[in-house]
Every structure is written in C-alpha cells, then in structure tokens.
Image 1 (cartoon, rainbow, N blue to C red):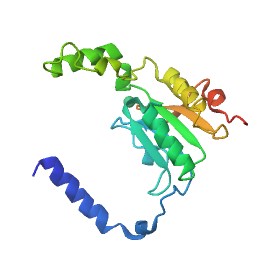
Image 2: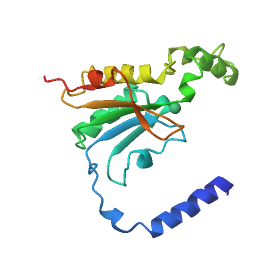
Image 3: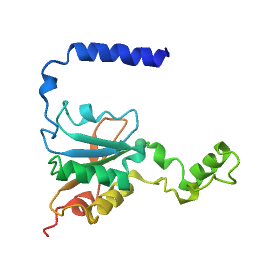
Length: 183
Ligand code: ZN
C-alpha cells in the first residue's frame, strides 16, 4: 500500500468515526449557492468561504474556468438542485497564468509517442490558459451569463482569492458582468 493511500484511508477512518448527523444531509445544497474555482491545492473553499458539508456546490478545475463542463455542472446545480447564486473565484499566482495553450501543446507532444507533433487531436483541445486572473474572471462570468442554458436571473459574483492573505478581492467589472438580467 502506498504511503499516500495509507494516509488517506487513515484520515478517512477518523472522519467516518465522527460523521454523526451528516448522514441526514439532503442532496440539494442547504445554502443554495455554487462556487466555480481553481483546483489549486492552496485554496480550501470550505474554509475561505465558510462552508460545512451540505452547504454549497464547489466545482473545481484547472483555473476555475467556465469550460463547457463547468457550465454543465452549474446548470445541473441550478435546475435540479436549486442553487440560485453563483461565484467565479480565480486566484493570484495561478499556474494557469504561467503557460500558454501553445506551451502545453508542446509538452503534450513530448509525451505522445508515434502520433506526430502534438499527438493526434490535441491541437483541437482548448487548455484555457490565461494571462491575468482578474480578466479571466470577467471573461468567464460573461461566458456563463451569455450561455443559452443559463437563466438570466441568477446573480454571478466574481472574485480573486489572494494566496498571500486568504482574502477574496473584488474584481473590477465583475459585478456588472454578473448582474442578473430580467428575461
Ligand atoms: Zn489556479
């Protein structure tokens, strides 16, 4: 058994021993909101946003980008599970700002044997790298706001989490981009 596997199972045994009332949590998030954020290990949405189990949906990917799959999760979160307020939270010092889509295409090509430069198909893949986290928050809010499957009355808030302070900073333009629209 790997050391990591051992550690995880040990931690889980301790968690399960204290599980208690959490067995009665319902599927829909009790506080009816969702957060889209980055997978960065320094970010703990439960702590920085004050969440307990059962409170909110947290959707994570590299960068916290509004990819098709993130929007799929947000729409399900709203339509089936009742969330009616969403957050897009990117962060300072994000790995996604340290490379371009072309960089990762080059890296992919060195890992992919026998399929020519870049490997088959990966040139069509959008890695969603970005240069500036405040700009990417507004872009992602706009993409969600304008998506045909997203109801216009859901407020979408945008912040940048500062990894040096643990604080959520407002993003210029995010409030305007994410304001509900009456349809
Ligand atoms: Zn990140």
